[in-house]
Image 1 (cartoon, rainbow, N blue to C red):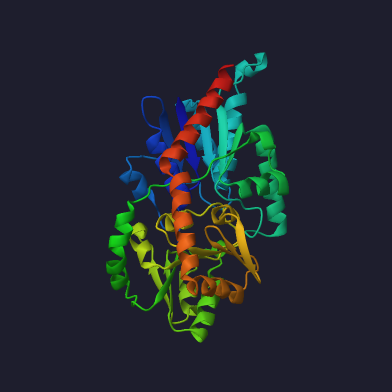
Image 2: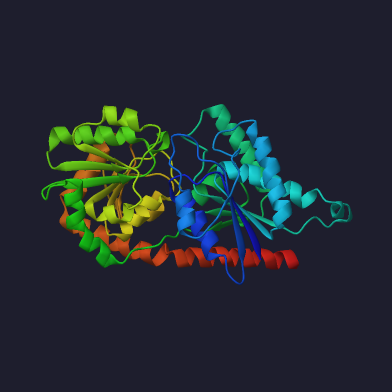
Length: 403
């Protein structure tokens, strides 16, 4: 079975690793997978090295990038030619931009053939994965409405299967924003590679010493892109507020992006910026808490990896983070204490710091969340499970196509 996978760009983040892992794992006796990717714009870190490390050689289309432009017509033509040359059984698009251009090209490939006149369009199935969505907190009202209209049309006319990565995301996309029909959706949680637990335990002391974190300090870590949607100004406000109330909290930000210079200018003294690191898994044991302040999320791989290391998290209650946290056990004025994490519903520095303080003050709560989180993600977010789920979807689609 020939699989053509398309993503807008291999920038730092979970989606890039996701498509590389799937392309690698579904290149075997049963599947022939090819990855198509656009260019990484200036100011974002390129993860092409990760594809190379995993033996994946993408087809790069330089004209395809994140922002809308006239070059998208060139990208559309190049993707169409790639599809026509490769003749895939399944076209699987990832992220909004690639999902739009890739599915339009797939629609044209399927229907623009003489055999359509006798009711036999080309036999190809189209899958789209929403890693997140741009239906709120990204753009203004007019632009968002245009994107919603496009997504609704693509779901109706150019998509056989839609993959959501969490229950919460499925409910938002299908029922709140009315994109696609419920029967088109399959929920496939993310998957990742987990280092052995003993690696985390052995690395903690050495990594904290390397980062200059003292034994008495409580290290709050953030890992991700430094972009508007991550709402880092909120985290800096939390750090500033914490600095006025206590001297033992240290905030460490791992990642890079266009906002870094401005964020560094605004940061209080208890914040350290490390930039992009390829050894994030090695750094995780240095943290006592993982923090996430996003306005909108799919399911953040950074939280999954932190949970696998047994590090409790405090996060804004957005997207798939709600599913990661699990059932609410207790509520304290805007702070929800859940099975596997702490959620902040009212996104203020005071509430976020209250969530951090609630966790720090209760070692039993820390341990309970840590154990629950580690067990949950290792049972439900393995790369093997992800690969198996996607393989099953492809086989189902192929079977439907034949029948």
